[in-house]
Image (cartoon, rainbow, N blue to C red; front, side, top):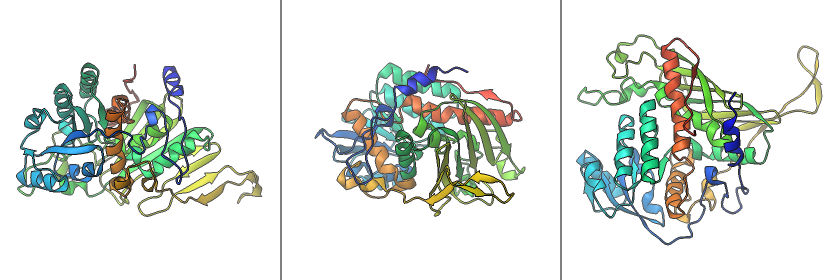
Length: 408
């Protein structure tokens, strides 16, 4: 096995982290939280995409002025202007990128447009924050990487899982060595009923029509990669479909409602990820980390988290054997958004498990401090590419496939 990445990650370990009631989180560049701003400089931001883009609280950040907004639809432009207290709008990204006052752009546009929009933004000399996934093809992954390297501008993917309260806790536990060795992990993204978004009211298809589940993998893969820094190197994918006519004619030629991927990491560990659009499933984005000393499990929707600790106490099991008894404990989940990891005005719950304010703060802080954001291009592609290859594997009957490494 190629262990070259192990050296990379050994240089990216946590520098430290405080308790929930302590001072701001202090983490290495790969796990960077900025805490309270120390600069008075204002970043002039453009926000593009009047649905998802409404929920990122740029107007609450003390170092941000929302200079302009954009959407193809007038009603959505109006909603963005109202939300962000902005008087300037453009009816296209191309026009917004010509605005010389704008230094950074938040791109919350349809997934098939992400690669093109990011490349356009970077080439226009603007920093880019983009919704997930980074891209839908391996070719576009390389195209974004080239644009980041050529322009030198900041790129961050707005992956919510990385900044969920439970993921932040898992990072803290990992840094403190509580897991021991995480030998196995798993994550699920269940969003049944998504076909309601496949078509517009006039019957025309949206970009979501037939989207392969594993082309939207980052809510799953980030649960592992954001915590341990591992890279997913090999995958076997399995898909499930029921020949529903609603999937026919989709632009992705995708036959699957649900996909499961079995990954191997660069440390020889296992990771199982599921993305499902249909079934008797509780809506959730959840992860679990299994260590030889301790494991940490997120609940399904509205269920509590808990830990399992390797036991020292010997007991008789149901078969009459004497075994070490693991100890299961409920976990009092920290709400990190209440701490000074965020500016005061942003210390409130936000979308996707409290992650949205963290995403905005991390992006702006990376620009102010001239450093890499936590979900930089390399992390973004490490989250994204495994799903693309997993879908290829599922289409080929579960053939084991190698995942490209963009760090090299």
